[in-house]
Length: 71
Image: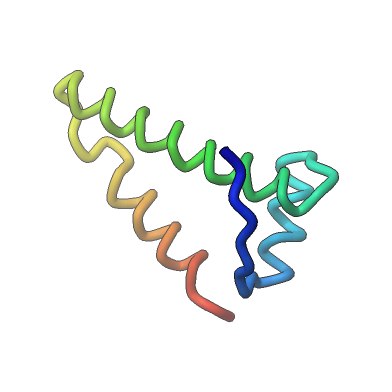
């Protein structure tokens, strides 16, 4: 199901994401970025299940927080 939404997005972050992800539209970039978050969470869950908690989690969380703050 696709749902039309209206959001205020940081244009620079969106531009960077489109370039990195190789997408042609903003919608495609947002979908790919959301999928990447889900893949990252599965990786973290797998590492926890393998008995390797925290192998990169704290660094990853710090980087995500830094990236989410407006410059």
